[in-house]
Structure formats: C-alpha cells, structure tokens
View 1: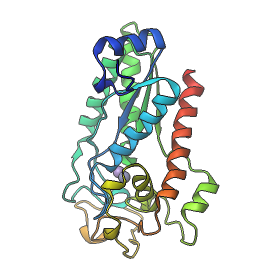
View 2: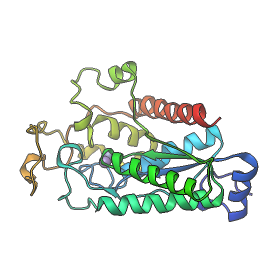
View 3: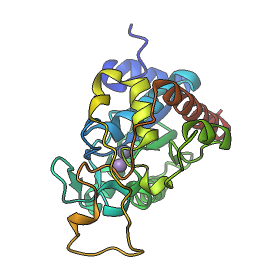
Length: 258
Ligand code: ZN
Ligand code: MN
C-alpha cells in the first residue's frame, strides 16, 4: 500500500481507513493560476500551497485533497492584476461555491478535522466564507463535530528569517512580494527545475496610488508582472522560508487538532 499522503494517490478505502482509524486531518490546498513574471511558473501559488500541505500532512498525520488550483481574481496591487495573459481567475462566487462543495464532501466522507491551506493572497475572505458556510450547513445536517482551520501558509514570518531573506536589500512590503524574493527563493528550493534564474526581472518597484481603478491600468504594473525583484533569491533562503512555513502550518494544525 502506498504511503502517500496525497488523496489522489491512494484508493478510497485506504482514505476512509485513515480518516476513521488514524484520525487523519484532511488538508485542502488552495492556490491560483497566475502569472509570476518571466522566471516562475503559472502554478506557483497552488504548487507551494500543496507543497506546504503535503509536508505538514506527513508530519501530523494527514491526507491532502487535490488542490483548488484556480482561485480568486488577481488584483493589480497584490498579484499583478486580472488582465495579464495566463492569469486565470474565478469569479468570487465560483471560488466560494467550489470550496464549499469540496468541504461538504469531505464532511460527508467522515472528515472532522479539515485544514484549508491558502497560497494566494486574494483568496482570503472568499475562503473564510466557504469555510463558514460549510461548517454551518454541515452542523445543521447533524455533523456537529467538524472543525475547519484556515490559514495562509505564510501567515507569519519571523524577524530573523526576514532579516536573512532581505539581507542588503530593502523590504518592499508583503503586498509587493508577488514574484519577488520570497516566492522565487521558495520555488528555487522546492522546484528548482521550474525556475529560470536568468529571466528574473529587475525593474523599478511600482508606485501604486492608494486606490484601485476599474478598468485596470496595465501601465501601473511592471512589464514582467512581478511587483518586486527576486534577484537576491537563493535556494538557501528558500529553505529557511519553506521550513519555517512547514513548521508554522504543522504547529497550527497540531495545536487545534492533536
Ligand atoms: Zn504567488
Ligand atoms: Mn497569488
């Protein structure tokens, strides 16, 4: 029998056994299909969320459901915007409905401890809504002991790690981290074959006004689609970040569910 923690890689009865006998926590990674500049793949957000979920599941005893890959609309000032080629956004209603449906199905399977791991900033409140509705409606249907934990895998970064990640460069703010040092470093550590370091852009930081415009102004966003430069990123920085985030997710899930 495969020891994989990935739901898609094990048979249904093994999945059922892990929930029933091993009290498995079911992880639901949520990401985005979104441009991340010239050097990172479009799947960066869902791939990293899934990576964190897999590592945490291996540590705390869990099963990882297939990720919700498509996600909330990319915003200009945090993700480069909804207008970019390759960025494939869902309407918020669709994301809420899809996540809600998946959570209700996991509840029907018998999962009572669910961890939604978000890897895309814009998902935040829509995932809250899906989790809220799923828990509420399952409870109304008699499932009284289901709990859902939801977090951004990068919810918190220690000052020590930030200092090492931004040694010698000024921190642009997390909003501008799209395709920047953090994501580039993490991808270099986890998926080096998918990063083309020779293509990391080094453009001027965007100077966003304190508001959004509709229709969007494409000229607000640097040509590459990155909001800051990932040039200083290294796999070593990536290791620091990733291992810290795996700890963060594992500790949070253990604190609530173990
Ligand atoms: Zn991203
Ligand atoms: Mn994103």
